[in-house]
Length: 68
Picture 1 (spheres, rainbow, N blue to C red):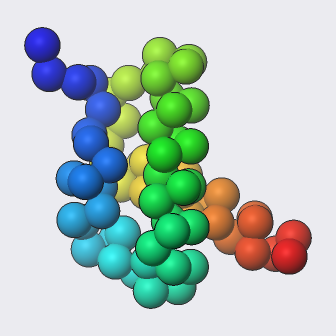
Picture 2 (cartoon, rainbow, N blue to C red):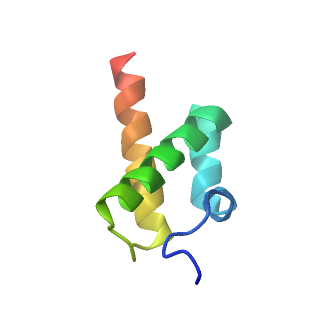
């Protein structure tokens, strides 16, 4: 049975992810995406488009960068 969420690798291959990597760095982007995916799994909120997951990660990264 395929996962209801895209893989981290699939998300990182999207052009929108490249923007996040350029702005925040690969490690921070990967960590944010992992947190988003883990949150979706924990709350069983599947079916969101990949762009929504990337937007969530971008929000996390922006919030973290402002608090530093």
